[in-house]
Length: 261
Image (cartoon, rainbow, N blue to C red; front, side, top):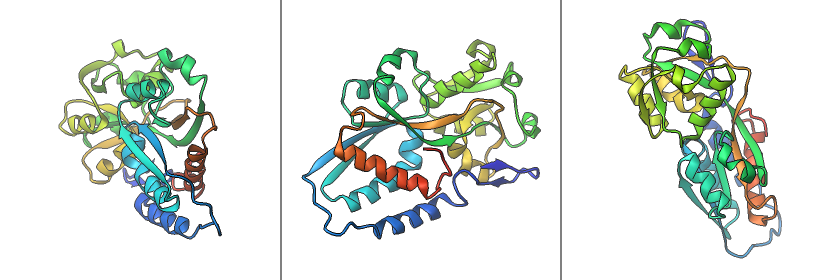
């Protein structure tokens, strides 16, 4: 998604239409049938994920995977990043998705498992469409100081990623005028739309609200890149998880997200 000079929004990172592309992907996959493909015994893959992956792109992938591999079930749980990493660390799930690796308490665990960048995300500063700060073509982190700001709780993956980006520019949470903290991005966007402050959100989460004219935006300026990450606690040792990972890469290669894998 890019911001044009006329304040319109055009989608580049996720294709012109996510849902149209998802349909194309499903049609493409439905034609992939290995002749004489061996039916595997019934297995279940347990996936735990944050809000972005769980709501915005995993559903069509899981549906297509179930259709192709009838003998493999998939359970999906949406949780905070903190709960996602905790359950993965205790082997309560097979795969996890999160918007950040910026959790120091999990560093030893994260160094011991297979991590894949699924697709890139961009961080936007969001506010009411008439907010004057959004007239800028890009907003540096230090420009956010003193402005009423709506944040997420520390257990959020996207909040952890925002903290990483702000810290890289020398901006601390204490420098922000935080007026509210919410559990999820949907609540943050609602608060911003009501004029309670500005915030930072991923492009994929903000898109439909921007398109509807509910909120305005400007890119957050940073040299750092952000991604949705997939964590495989089996380190490539599970046949079922490897199949799902391969299926996911096929999805990415069709450039629904134009992402890096």
